Each structure stands twice: as C-alpha cells, then as structure tokens.
Image (cartoon, rainbow, N blue to C red; front, top):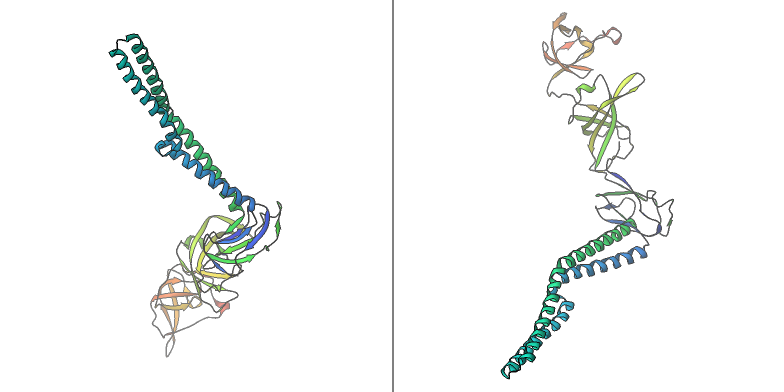
Length: 346
C-alpha cells in the first residue's frame, strides 16, 4: 500500500530553525505554517520592498492625477503670476496709449506677448511630457513589484507550509538546528493524506484484457486478515514488464481509509471483480465433466448416479455458475483431485 498524497517538505535556504509549530501525528490544513527559519534579513528586505512599492504606487498616482500632487500645485503660482503681470501690463499699455505714448505702449505690449508665449510653452511642455512621465512611473512601479515579489519569495524559502490537508507523519529537524548549504534541502517534515491509499501491484498477461478502469476489487491485508476492504481499479499500464518469462502489467487500485487503520507500506492481495451475478447456483469446477461446449455432471439420486447435461455461466476459476440442468439442493459427484481433468472454465 502507498499513500499517493505524500510530500517531503524542506526549506529553500540556509539558516537556523527558529520554530516548529506542529507535532508528529498532528492534523494540518493547506497553507498552514509548519516551521520557520530565523530570517531577520529576509523580513527586513520584505518591509523595505513593501515601502518602495507603496512609494512607486503613490508616484504613479501623482503623475496621472497631478492636481493631487504638491509638486504640481507648487508650480501653479508661477503661471498665475505671469497672467496677473500680463493683465497689469495691458492696463498700463492702455494708459500709455491714451496719453499718446505709442512707442512705450507698443514696447510694453511686445513684452506682454513674449511673457505669455513663454508661459504657454512651459505649460505645453508639461502636457507633452505627461505620457512619458506616466510610462516612467509605471516602469518604476513594475520594478518595485518585482522587488517585492522577490522579497516575498526569499522569505517563503525560510518557511515550510502544508501543501494540502493532511497529517504530519515525521519531523526530521529540531529548533535551533543550523541548516547549511549541504543540509537545508534535505526533507524536514513529511506530510501525508491518510484518507486515501493506493495499492500498486501487477496482473499477468492472461488476465489483463479482462480488467477495466472502475472495476471493484476485494482486498486482503496480511496485517489485518479479518478486515474487509474494497477498492476500485484506477490504472492499468499499457506497457508490460517481463519477470521469469511472464509478462505482467502494473495496476493501481484506490482504497478509502476513513478510520486510518491502513499504513503506508503494508502488504496486500487483491481480487478484481470482473463481473458479478447475485443469487446464482455454483458448483465446484472439479465436478464438471465433458467439454465447455457440452458439459455434464454426475447427479446422485435415490437409486443411482445420473449423467446430466448442464448449461454453465461465469466462473472464478474455482466454482462455476450453473444456468440450467441442476436445482439447488441436488447432490453431485465430486471426484478426487487426482482424477480432476485438466480443463479451464470461464
């Protein structure tokens, strides 16, 4: 028997075992932390990466929505100052014109136009540069995200978590133990799911064609001979292996293990049920005479032994179903094993 859901869990980096949070035999849930290394550098790097990511995210928001940015707001007084100055100069130019000072007024108007053009260019440049600024901020955010992912991955290497719901089968580390570059990858905790068990065996070439996926099987354990177990065929290999001149095909049968009595490594024997018929009349194969096409048996009556033809059905190799020719309760002759003819039924 073998438990298909079995995982040898290990750390992904060197360090000192800081904490083991479970005991052997304890039930755990998927994602639960089982053990940790002392990793202050990884934890500090994660906090730094989280801060850098948040800063990059904020920078992108300020680039896309500049009215939320203090930097943008601090630029606005310069623009408004230029507009206010232009308004004052226009009023002054009008006064000069009214006084007949045309040249002075024209010079002032030229200066107003020049200042407004400069302000417009500065504002336009900011608008044109916005897509590039957004792209740069997005790249910086992606870079910060990658750094955060790397920091999280590094910290995850210093933590062992359960890959599935199961039971801690073995713990092979101790708190305070130093794991070096030669030992950190060794299994630290073995996790199993004891609710499902597989039986791996072989079927010979004479029987493999009769076996189909989903067929039921009766299993007998060497360690628990009185326990009735049932399973189903889950896998039959298409590739055969030769042992002692006989071709075998690897086969897997799945069993349920709700009471968890079954253990990994137990030996077992399975009988796959090819077909099933209930409430049938069976006779030992030794009692059958003749051929498969014309079988007959010897029936014991009150006065003599009667030769009687029968119609046969399925056989398990030991007993055969009688479809007609015999009634329940009738006695038949069972010859000694030494006289049993070599015939194959079913």
